[in-house]
Amino acid sequence: MLNHRERQNFIEHLIAKNEDLDHLSDHELKQLLTKLLAEYPSATHLNIVERRDLTNQLFNTMRGLDLLQPLLNDNSITEIMVNGFDHVFIERQGKIQKTSIIFDDKEHLTYVITRFFGKANRLINEQHPINGMRLMDGSRIHAILPPSAPDGPIMSIRRFTGIRPQMDALIETKTISEEAADFLINMVEAKKNIFISGGTGTGKTTFLNALSAFIDKRERIVTIEDSMELNLQGIDNLVRLESREAGPDGLGAISLDELIRSSLRLRPDRILVGEVRGGEAFEMIQAMSTGHPGSMSTGHGNNSQEMLDRICLMILMSSALPWEAIRRLVASAIDIIIHLIRLPNGQRKVEEIISIEGYETGQFVLKPLFRREGEALICCS
Image (cartoon, rainbow, N blue to C red):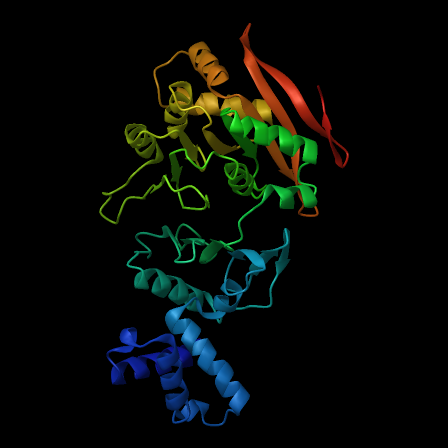
C-alpha cells in the first residue's frame, strides 16, 4: 500500500490532470481513481482487493477525513478522539477504547486536519491553531495544532448519530426510573423551568432532547446552542439559533448572550439553551424570570448545589448585581435541577432531582425529590 507521501503525490498527479475534480460525484471520482490507479507505477503490483482498498483510502483522503473516515461512517461510534498521530480513541456504547489507527507521522495528521478544514473554508494553521466546525450530518469537530498542542495535532469529533433520544429508552437503560420520568414529564407539561447539570459525557443534551418531546406541539420554541445538537421533532413553530466564533480577522463573532437577547424579540413560549458556560447565564436566568416559563438549559457541575453556585458566579462576572440579589434571582428562576453522572462502566444515571423552594438566610432552599441509592432512583417525598 502507498504511504502518506505517495498518496499525496498521486493526488497531486490526479489534480494536475483533472482540474474539475470538485464537480465530480462521489461515484465518478471513485471510477476515476480506479482507472488511474491501474496505470500508476507505484500501484501496478497490487491485487484487486488491495487496489479497491487503496481506492477507498484515496477517496477518503480527498473527500473525507482520511484514515478516520471509516470511524465517522460507523453509527455505533459516538466520539472520536485523536490524541496524536499514533493515539486514536473511540467511544462506543459509553465505553472508550483505543483503535489500531496510526497516521504516518505528525505531518500526515496535520495535513489531514488543515485540508479538511480548508475545504470548508475554515482557517487552521500555526498562526490560528484552534478551530471547530459542524459537519453536514450534525457532528461537531474541534482541532488544535501546534504550538497550542506542543505534542502534535489533536482532534475530537462528537458524532451526531441521528437517533432521537426517547424517555422510554432512558428508562429501559435504567438512566432514570419510570416514576421519576413521569414526574419530569409533568414538570415539562406544567411549564416549570428545568436545569440539567452534570460532567462531560453524562448525557445532558440527550436528556434535554428527551424532555423536549413533551413540550406542547402548539408552542413556539427557540433553541440556542454553540453547535446544533438539539433535535426537536413535531414542533412546527421552531426557531434554531447557533453562535459563531470570530473569523481570522477577529470579527463576526455571535455570542450566546446576544442570541438569547435576540430570542426575546421573537415571541418565544419557551427558550432552550444547549449549554451555559459564561455571561449568557445572566440572559438565560432573566428570560426564565420574565415571562418564558418552561425554559430549559444545561451546564457543567459536580452536583446540584455546585451548579447553582456556578450559575451565580457566571452571572456575577457579567452583571453589576450584588451577590445576594443574584442568588435570589437564580432561586426564583429555576424550579427543578436534574443532576446526571456517568459510572466507571460508561453507564449514565440520574443522580438526583431537586426542587428549588427559595432562598433564605444566605442559602438556597433545596428539596430533594429523587435520589440515587445504589442502582435505584428513590423518591424522597
